Structure formats: C-alpha cells, structure tokens
Length: 456
Image 1 (cartoon, one colour):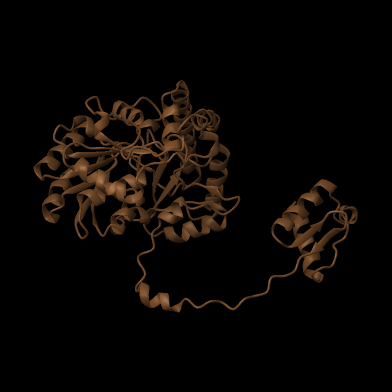
Image 2 (cartoon, one colour; image 1 turned 180 degrees about the vertical axis):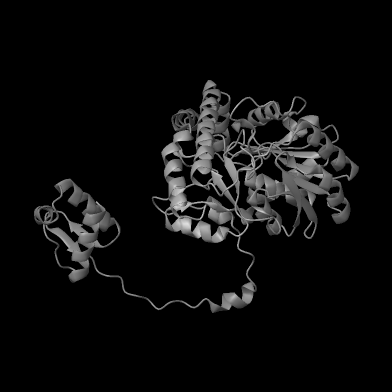
C-alpha cells in the first residue's frame, strides 16, 4: 500500500484544493491494484487531512492549512536558565521509529504479555462495586499481603507500600533517605533509570566497579569511607545492564558494610521472576535483621508495560519517611490497576505465564549469544546471564560506540550505547542489547544488520 499512498499524494500535490481525484475505478486501472487497496489508501489520506471524501460525490483535495506566524517563546529562555543534562532515559523507554527492530527495550513485547488473562481479570474487576473508588494510601491490603509473602518470610503487609512502578519507587526511596548534594553509591555500570533519578533529586552518584560476580565489595568499604555516603543502590539479581548475580558471600559482605557505615541499601529486585532456570539466590532483604534494606519489587517487567504497580518494603522509622515521600507524588495507585494486579497474581494463570515467559526469554538469550559470537566476532560477552533480558558487550577500545548506535539506527535497529549506563566515565566502549521486545526472527535480522555495518 505504500506505493499507492505515494501516488495518491502525488495526485493531491499536483492539483488545487477542492479538485476531485480520479475515481476508485480509474485509480485501480492506473495503479494496478485492487479496489480495497485504493479505498484503504484514500481512507488513510483522509485521516491525515490530505483529502476529503464526500459520499456519493467522490474524493477531493483538502484545503491546505495556512501557515500561522510562529509565537515567540523567547522569554522562557531567560526564565529557565541553563538546560539540564539531557537524560538518555527517554531514548530507552520512548517509542522507536516505525518498523524498527527494537533491541534496547526492557518492556516485554506483545507476544510475552498475558493479554487474554489480564482482559478477563479486568472484566471481573471493573464490573464489581466500588471499582473506581479511592484506594488506601498504602495500597490494597490483600495486594500488600501478596507482595509481603513474595519478599521474605518475616515481612508483613504493614511493611509494604504500593507505588506506580519501579521507577517511581526508586525516586521515592532516594528522596526519603538522602538530601540534595548527598553521595549515593551505585554499581558501575548500573540501571540508567536510577542514574536519572539520582540526578533529578540533586544527588551525586558515586560508582563502585562490578565484575562478572557483581558489585566489587573490595572497593565498597573505601567508597563508603571516602564519600560519607549513607545510601547504596544496587540490583543484586541479574543487574541491568550486565546481568550479574551477586553471590552469597558478597551479599553477606554488602550487608556487613552497610551496618558498619549505618547506611541504607536500596535493593531493586526488578528481575526476581525472570530467571531462565531455577534460581535459589536470596534477596538482601531476606537476610536483613537490622532494617538496612529498602526493597523494591515491580510487576511491570514480569507482566506488561502498563502494569505499573510496585512495592516498597521497609522496616523501622524509614517506612514513615517513605510513606510521606510517596503521598506527595500522586496520593495512591489507581484502584482498578491494583485490583486487576491482585486478581491476576493470585490466579493459576500467573504461574503459567511466568513459566512461559522464563522459557521464551531463555530461548531468546541463547539465540542472541550465539548470533553475537558468530556474526559480531569483535564484540566480547563477559557474562552470559542466567536471567533477565540484558546482554552486555565489550567492544574494541578504538570503536566509536555512539557512531555504531547511530549507524544501527539508520539501518533500522535500535540499540543502547554502553556509556549511558555508567554514572561516571566508562571504562571502555560497550553495547547493551535486550531480548525483551524482539522475537527470535527480529533478533536474527537485527544482528545481521549490525554485522553488515562492518565494524564488529
């Protein structure tokens, strides 16, 4: 249909507003396509305002909009002052160009979302009484109880607050336990949404290196001591972007150092449900008896992008700080969303969905690893993740990663430059690829297009 649209636009551009286009029958003969194709193309141009269809009379060239003098907003330049650093977060979560192969997104594509089950849950919820009423400020008790059972054996519903997604939870936690200008320790590289949240709150992210086994605890003590930081943000379970899993010994050491320095740990457990095989790793929260850990767990990655429901778990006075910080944002999570989430996660369909999701992510990751090794031989895979959706690549030191990302975009493939995931200077060029929004065929085609660029 693209060719037909081009020809019809040519007809419209050549005529004057109000002139009739050729009839459908004449266009069928001229373009050699079916009447259905012509009708669909005319409907699309009518939607775009290029033509106007008048039943019984025909299709006519629409009036061209007159250019209006552009309003002046120059006063805003003075009032706003210097521009903030542009966040790469919008590039990560924004919509890609049409027909792009998306290899950077952390949201599951439609084939991995339980759309039918969610629709059934929504019908049951929205047909009930009070579905659109206000929700408790802390969240529905039943859903908080469910999150409590998922978090750790000794967590109670009263320890849980519900928020609108993991990103909101990160921002709330940071504002609750740190003041503008404070240092916050983070993995390097780390989730760029956390970097953006830190900078938006006026906080200073301080990098702590990672290796294939996660956060380097041999640097952590010195980082606490030299900066005076009282907050550590990390993702112990399949960290994004590296896919590392923090082992038991390092977990114990992280908790010990946090206690020693009277520091909070913001544990972003976004990926607990996304292990590709059996995963018996424990959360830091489950080993914390001292109230050091503020635990975050979201349903967005494991269910659907618009299932923006997450839990924050904390114990002690910090819970009051968290509650105060999150109420300021938006009062409460919409009740229908909470009810739908509760309906789904307490059904047998949720377990079936997770089994299928893990299997599919594992298959995609294995294929991506094989394709990178076969077709991008200059890219090194330091770790094959056993969960999640991110694959971290080390690139040759002389390679321009930003140039590669631009060239890939021109070839219709969206990838993420590694430097955006570092809170400070990167230790070399990297790429972060994702299997969340690309099926097997899309992954193969995407890597083939990158390989044809000839730099890897």
